[in-house]
Image (cartoon, rainbow over all chains, first blue to last red; front, side):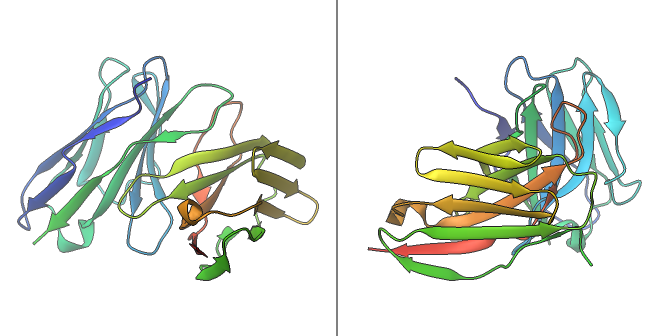
Length: 112
Length: 113
């Protein structure tokens, strides 16, 4: 079956610009997660959705980061006023109760 | 001290060797333990998912969890060049769903033909 998909696969933007990253989870998975992975590091938790609501957004680094999941399926991670330190691979994952999380291929964000 | 410690390697072994990968952790609330394989410029791929202590086997892979020692392991038998990747351990306190994973840094494995 189809896995988690993320678009775009690569995004290059200038410092100060706004970006949106999209995630399509596996059909039927109620839980959706965003992680950020820097080079040589494991993924770091950003936010977790159960259905439409953000159950835990404690990993969002500051108020420039925001994520939504309005219909309980597709999610968008939004970053305002991007900074060079935001450059990383942004990973989305989904799961259902009793399984591990399945990750998408990621969006590689580069802020110049 | 980080919550999850994992030796980043690199680890290089000949084809056919048994590989042992390990993580230690400090948070006694962790109950769900996972191993992921990540190829270069790809997303992590779930290999093993276990709950609490014990062993789980799937093909050439065996996962072990020792909660009393806060130590988890992944063994790969008859390693193949295609196993060359970064292996990430992950764990969560999760209440029945896979929630807020905490990852190790990953161990880079190379299997030489």
